[in-house]
Structure formats: structure tokens, C-alpha cells
Image 1 (spheres, rainbow, N blue to C red):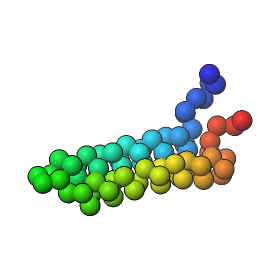
Image 2 (image 1 turned 90 degrees about the horizontal axis):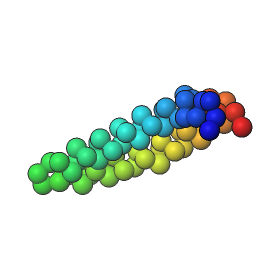
Image 3 (image 1 turned 45 degrees about the vertical axis):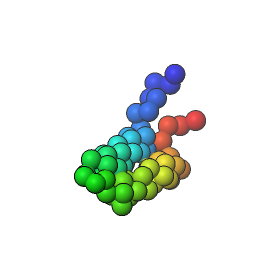
Length: 65
């Protein structure tokens, strides 16, 4: 495993966005009755996390290969 495995700004930004996405989706499901609009907003943030990670990696903020 590399010395900086996952310790890059791109990786941490993707993790924070992904965590926020799951929190938003969870809040939507905890309402009574479940608020599916909030749930799907949270789920829509997940692919955004991946896109942000790829873009930041291409900008040089990811691990060097």
C-alpha cells in the first residue's frame, strides 16, 4: 500500500461529500412518513462525490501514479 493511501485532498473531499449525502438521505428516511424528496436529494449527491474526486485528481490534488 502506498504511503499516502487515501490521504489526498481529492479523497477527503469525496469522503466528506459522500458522508453528507448519506446523512441527508438518512434524515429524509427518519421523518414520519419518510420524505422521499430529501432521500433522493441525498442519493443524488453520491455521484457528485465521485465526479468531484475525479476532477480534483486530474487537477493534481490526488495521489501520483
